[in-house]
Length: 182
Ligand SMILES: CC(C)(COP(=O)(O)OP(=O)(O)OC[C@H]1O[C@@H](n2cnc3c(N)ncnc32)[C@H](O)[C@@H]1OP(=O)(O)O)[C@@H](O)C(=O)NCCC(=O)NCCS
Image (cartoon, rainbow, N blue to C red):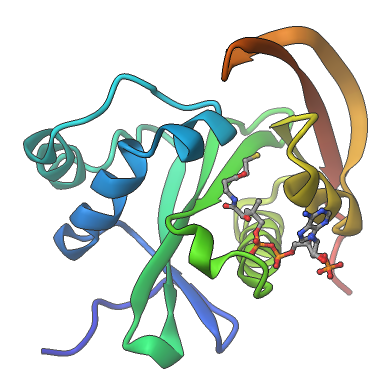
């Protein structure tokens, strides 16, 4: 069977809507306490059935929001992570983004950079957004390094905002103005 069609691709990492085949990847990730904490996500665990229903019903996406699974083309379109664009404000042409890889073993190969670049280009060129923002734990050095190198600047810091691993952590708000492509 051919792989599901993808919406975006840079030739290495492609992005597409979540498919049932992605279920086990989301399931494992949503039950990995360290991983869900690093994305400041839902931390009570999720059952496999709930994931299947979630994907079948559109992965919780409403309105102009977007959730895309990232797949590695050279590895038989293996799902490696996701990116979401949410709270899209079409009047102010702003949205929030969030992303994560499913597996720590895939970190540090430039996939996060590719995913974020593809999605920023997409919302600029096809949705008409002007600015995107994200929240990140101040201690998440790898993520902060990546975001800053992609042109995200700090606009705020929520002090002692997020409780994880027995302590409160600061949360940074980073934003990037999307320059029009020539
Ligand atoms: C954060 C995340 C999305 C980054 O994606 P990635 O594919 O691992 O990152 P990339 O390989 O594209 O780039 C990472 C950058 O950080 C740098 N880096 C890697 N490890 C680092 C570390 N421990 N400290 C500082 N910088 C580090 C790399 O050198 C690279 O920079 P460069 O491209 O200028 O060389 C991914 O690691 C992930 O999903 N982590 C777990 C969940 C998470 O934290 N999500 C983000 C929540 S806001």
